[in-house]
Image (cartoon, rainbow, N blue to C red; front, side, top):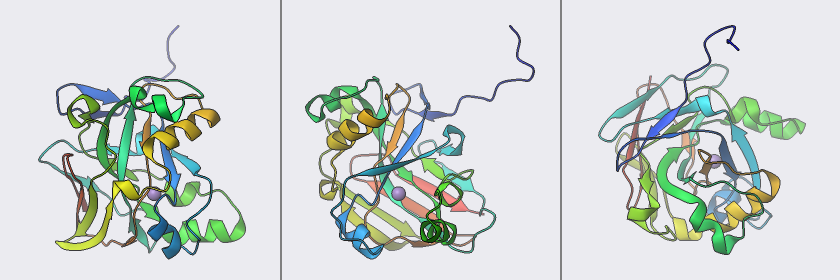
Amino acid sequence: MSYVFAPPAVTAVPVTSGGSFPVHRVYCVGRNYADHAVEMGFSGREPPFFFLKPADTVVPVAAGETGQIDYPSLTSNLHHEVELVVAIGRGGSHIRAADAASHIFGYAVGLDMTRRDLQGEMKKQGRPWCIGKAFEQSAPIGPITPLAQTGEMLTGSIQLSVNGTERQQGDVKDLIWSVNETIEQLSIAWTLQPGDLIYTGTPAGVGAVLRGDLLLAQVQGLQPLRVAVR
Ligand code: MN
């Protein structure tokens, strides 16, 4: 069988130990740090909920490089959300939290870029978040470090600065739903596949970026992620 046009290229994220990680799906967890849930007007205690971004919204940034993203259309309030990203290496469904680590290939630093004004409007109207969350270049990610090198990442500082000024600061230990619990919940709703990325949520301090801004996203123990907005 021949395709009627060339299939799209596979999005692939560099791996620190060599090779690259082909992306299947991108899952995101909403409001997974209590202080961020509070800043968004919620109590910070609710079951986890998820949304997806298409694989081709991922912007892989190699070690030592600065990724470039274009300021997107339709918004005047583009927000940064720094997140620990979990890369799934072994698929499965109904994975128990106690077994979740054996499904993790590695970890990376990611940005869940958000058209906050559009997301807010969709929330108000009870409509899907896609237009606020799932736009092109909305999911920059740094290199993936294998779990074999990091061990299970249960704690570690997570932070984001814009033009050298700190905006977000937290610790992965403060996730409402831990990485392992997130994998358990997610794998009940969807069958996880090798190549899936999970953006695990952002701590407090989300805010707007402008054209010309330089973002530095960091999680302790992982390669930093630098992104410029143009
Ligand atoms: Mn997020």
